[in-house]
Length: 113
Length: 114
Image: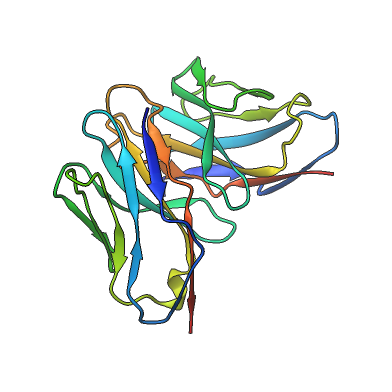
């Protein structure tokens, strides 16, 4: 079955550490996205990528970095510069038309310990 | 810029009650409109969509009609079930060529009591 796989489901980070969240899709979608969701709030866009080797900052990119070396993969690194990283992170992808909306992964819950 | 405004929650209903979750939008051009549902601890799932004015999206007993004159896309269900308890997000996609234009509302928490 086609879909988006995020891993790990739960992640714990110590202060000052960088951590990387994985996002893999087998839908042959061109565009991929990372969103952050805080309790009781909507989704905020961190980064997005329309094609391989290209990506753009979203609304809250500070303290995060991404890469898009393969069409299927769009990992997100939460750096030590992100002062409040505890949140639920969602990866999504979209086909070229966008007529079918976005497909989301099941999310990674990151907690700073 | 684009924006989506949803009715604030939480919303609590008894089983078999009628559900309406209001959603209005501001956008340039002619966006596509979506409702997503998020169950606890999971990602978002597409519930229904409409791509042009007067279209009605429907799925699993839920319906929403794209009303251009009132810039609205209210979600309705005639008889809710306990299993409908989730967070519902209204969203718009401005298909003007850029990949980034999916704008979400803040979400509405629905709890259905038996």
